[in-house]
Amino acid sequence: MELWPGAWTVLLLLFLLLLILLPTLWFCSPSAKYFFKMAFYNGWILFLAVLAIPVCAVRGRNVENMKILRLMLLHVKYLYGIRVEVRGAHHFPPSQPYVVVSNHQSSLDLLGMMEVLPGRCVPIAKRELLWAGSAGLACWLAGVIFIDRKRTGDAISVMSEVAQTLLTQDVRVWVFPEGTRNHNGSMLPFKRGAFHLAVQAQVPIVPIVMSSYQDFYCKKERRFTSGRCQVRVLPPVPTEGLTPDDVPALADRVRHSMLTVFREISTDGRGGGDYLKKPGDVSEARL
Image (cartoon, rainbow, N blue to C red; front, side, top):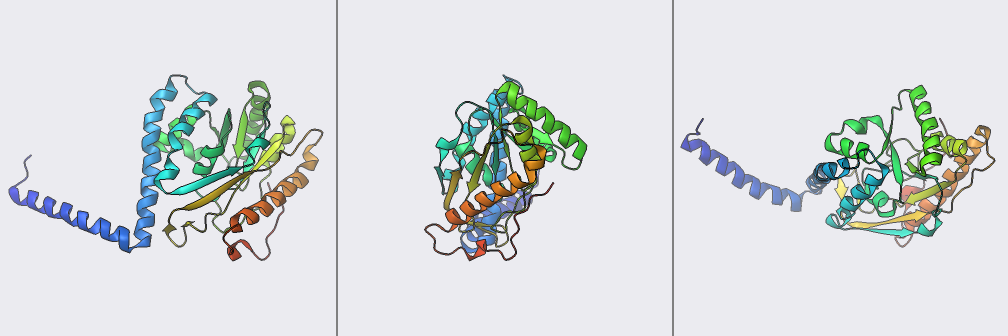
């Protein structure tokens, strides 16, 4: 079917209008810039996943494929002018399984994770990610562990299998114990699954803290500029000899240490940080 000449004129005018409108929105509207950046961020990750899938498929589902994903994602921070500083990487145990626990602020956590991700380490993610197009398939090929949080029985069963995998296959896992993204500049109470996992496997917990993004990213304000993020690896917390009865106190102790460091590195060199001081901030863990 051929378009009549007037249709081509209309399409050309619309294209020219977009060429004028998009740069105008970019420079004049911080909200538009935020949406453009987030759309490109998500789209670019999906595109990179498409490139990664055939390479990862050679091995099949294998934790070593996480190295490929990490290599392909390391450059993304430069596209957004985000400087990621890693401190304390020497705290990673050199030759044993462990459980990483980290705070969870937004999808930008992926940048900090890829910067510091140790070898043979895979995240535990919600099952919905598995259906996220090319990204879900790439994650599956990289050995990401998916949990249906709505089915407690299934989640517990998966955690028991993970505990065995940690010991038999020398794998590390990365868990966000808050359970969901937290944009309020603090930390939500921790869920205890990661700590039950570490105690069951009798492996150490390695806390990792990412500083607040508030100086360059805020979903509520639709603000996304360049900035700096510090990733701090804390000393490992041993679990040898601990039992399930010790898990609540263990989770509370780890969260307290992480929250203290979070406040320290989120205000360091910036002077402000009132948004980090939340009245009534609780530190109890929960299931």
